Structures are given as structure tokens and as C-alpha cells.
Image (cartoon, rainbow, N blue to C red):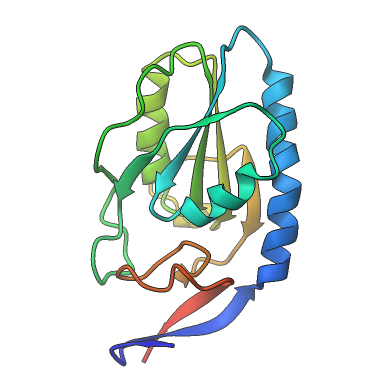
Length: 185
């Protein structure tokens, strides 16, 4: 699969079966940690960071045996045809009324840490009962521009630009069922 002859899908890093198995494990893991956090929280809110996390969160919630609601936030950090993060920009409203609730921020990938840092800080300003971060993919700490760690991680990957299973390049390749490297021609 190519994009105007400039980029193509390269080596598959994680196939669809491995993704499905790991997501099926992660749902109950995240749910157990939410239950263990307990406390006075009056609900569980998952906040997927769109658009990249849409495929992951759709599969993840089917494996989470807890009562939860979704609150969506859209963040842009790789605008247009670029493979380099330009910093996180919130595009739309962050869910309100998170005070006293247990929040799980869900993202497709932890790379520079900028997106998750911004969203986590904004969520904490609302005084939730707790905040956890769940990502499908995590690049090595050397990729971080800001210090940040996730509470739940599906897979560790090398510091390469990847597409598939919700991750894109210039809006394309989100529909690939696996995670693959993006290569330049």
C-alpha cells in the first residue's frame, strides 16, 4: 500500500492476532486496577484521545467488565503529511464534570509524551478521584520530549513511525488491522 509513491507500509511489527490477544488481556487488567483504586469515585470515565485511539478503545471497552462512560477529546500532534510531532494541540472540548470520578485516558501511542502530558494535566485540574493512562504502544524513553509514563501498556516498540490499528500518516492507514512501520520511497 502506498501514499502517492512517497510512503509505503513496511515491516509488520505486531500482527492482528497478537493485538487482539493483548487487548483482551488489557481490558480486565485495567478494570482490576480501577476497582483496586476504589475510593469515593462516583464513576469511571474513559477518555480516548481521538482520532488515533478510536480503534483501540472500541476493542478495549468490550473487555472491561465495569460500568463506564466515554468522554472524547481530539488532539492533533502530527498535522498533515509529517512524521515528526509538532506538539499537542487540543481540538475541541475536554469532557467536563470529572470531579470525583475515576478517569482512564486511552491513547494509541506514547512517544514524545507531549499529548498525554497536556491531556493528563487538564484532566487533573478537574479534581478526579484518580487518573490512569492506558496506551496500546510505547516507544522507548529516548523518544520523549517530556517525562511521562503510562500505567497500562500493550506493547513496547522501537522508535519508528508506525501506522495501522488507528494510527495514521496524513489521515491514511488507520484501517490496517496490524501495526506496521511506515517507509519512505
